Amino acid sequence: MAAPLPLISLRGITRIYQAGREQVRALDDVDLTIQRNEYLAVMGPSGSGKSTLMNIIGCLDTPTAGSYLLNGTAVEGLDDDALARIRNREIGFVFQTFNLLPRADALHNVELPLVYAGLSIRERRERAREALAQVGLAPETKRRPNELSGGQRQRVAIARALVTSPSLILADEPTGNLDSKTGEEILAVFETIHRAGNSIILVTHDENIARRAHRIVRLLDGRVSSDVVRETAR
Amino acid sequence: MSLLESLRLALSVLWSNRLRSFLTILGILVAVSSVVAVVAVIEGLDRYVSNQILSTGSHVFQISKFGFSTDHDTYLRMLRRKDLTLDDAVALERTMQHARAVVPVVSRGATLERGKEEARGADVVGLGDGYPELRTLDVVAGRHLTRSDVQGRRFVAVIGEQVREKLFEPLDPIGREMKVGRHRFRVVGLLKERGSVLGQSQDNVVLVPVTTYRKMYGRRDPININVRAAGADVLDEAQEEATLLLKLRRGLNPWDEPDFSVSTSEMFFELYKNFTRGIYGLTLGIVAVSLLIGGIVVMNIMFVSVTERTREIGIRRALGARQRDIVIQFLSESVALAVLGGLFGVLLGGGAAVLLERVTPLPAAVRPWSVAVGLLLASSVGLFFGIYPATRASKLVPVEALRHEN
View 1 (cartoon, each protein chain N blue to C red):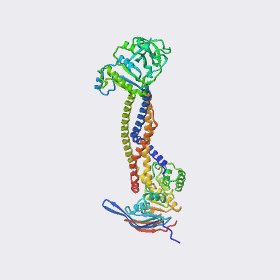
View 2 (cartoon, each protein chain N blue to C red):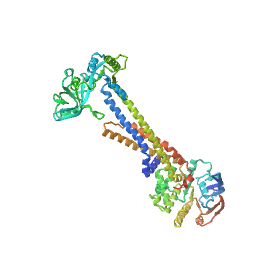
View 3 (cartoon, rainbow over the protein chains, first blue to last red):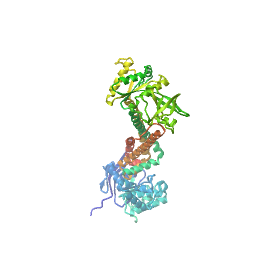
View 4 (cartoon, rainbow over the protein chains, first blue to last red):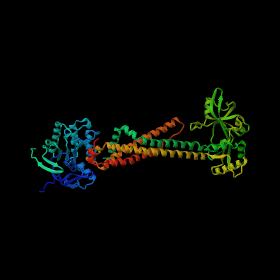
């Protein structure tokens, strides 16, 4: 029996930024393998490279050196269109600041990735409603982001990340702009969708939040400083 | 994203910035409305001029003391020329081989009266008896002026429809009397209604024998001589013949420049064509400048729009929009803006043309091709000036766009 193909395989990932005449090594030779259906937290102080790692895994940025296999496909060297397609099909982003389109209502926001996937309006509606229901929102939500509470906004954002059934949900400080009670609710939503079979990478600097994940990767100065799998009860 | 969807999105964005969108399209609006309005007015004029002026006398030419003058000196020189005389007309009629009719024409304004009724500003036209041959005047009742009317210097008149209406309604004017100034005339004929040219009624007119006219008003009014050639093929010969005969009568050598002018309605038409070409040229200038300005405004506003929506662009890119999708999104917006400007321009220009036709004597005809040209110009401007901002939007680095603070 062959070993299962990892979801993500990073080998020697290095990312160097040119800041004026200085070179900044945001990531330095990072190796990381992530399996399907993992719930992983990336921790580290600011400047440790966790955002850069996020962007590279999310195909928003490309490494200066190293190889990145997503579902067995080499990502480095792909052109812009191919990267857009991967972001569209394989990855669901959840941002700290929600990043919803202010002019569009909740349903339209959730539909947006499907627009770029080229689905018909009917299909989009249907899947967006399902996704909204999955995060515990009324599927007929016609309200705009500014008419929603912070928690509701983040639920809409999670629904938007889920709607394409991606291989991976990438969440960057998803509770950072929420009060602790609402943050707790959002973490519960992540746990629910993890149990439903989704793979999640959650970036945080909060120890308590990281502890909810099943594996914690710590970054320091662009390197992996620790990688701990916690055997907590499911 | 499909084109239809981008268009819908673009329209909703433009609608949410109504005032800004409206201000943005002003330049294009001006350009397109001038195209539509100017073309409408000039095409209307064209139709009119060819109907009214050109058709008033085919192979007819006019000999007059004055020609076209564009400066005061030429005018003064023309003023010193000898008047044409009734004898000139008679001589031409007797000797010309290529003329079917030679008609002296002289006119002035006068007030017509009958009892308490009066018609002001009527044209009193003195004519030689050959005028029915010019084929520009028809009678619907009574008769034309005749040779014996002219030779006998009779006080008989053929009146226009408007004169009949003002002085004789509801009576039959034929055989009744009226006054031209202080002279009594008997009406012998009624002209067919001719309508108006550029707001000037052609029916407020009374035709009298040219000899009677002279008896009433003396010799001060300059006589013109209208000649109808025997056929279109001898129009040139007829003009040369008349020119030569008149030179000799006026004591010039055949090789001298004539001291009178010979013109045809075709020449009028030619002059008119030059005039409209000038207007078209001017319009072209206005249109080009306003399109350029309109385009630059569109481009600027699109840059503003791109900057304002940097975050949105980042979000869309993160969710899977390709560069192409972003380009299409912003291009749809600039094209939609420009086409809206074009549509409003068509409405405004068409409206202006219709209004002009209603309140002024200028005729107007909105041409479908001018609408098409206007909209085509507008959309090209939207496309052309939208390319740069749209491309710039698509080249934004997703990570940086996402970090952008709005």
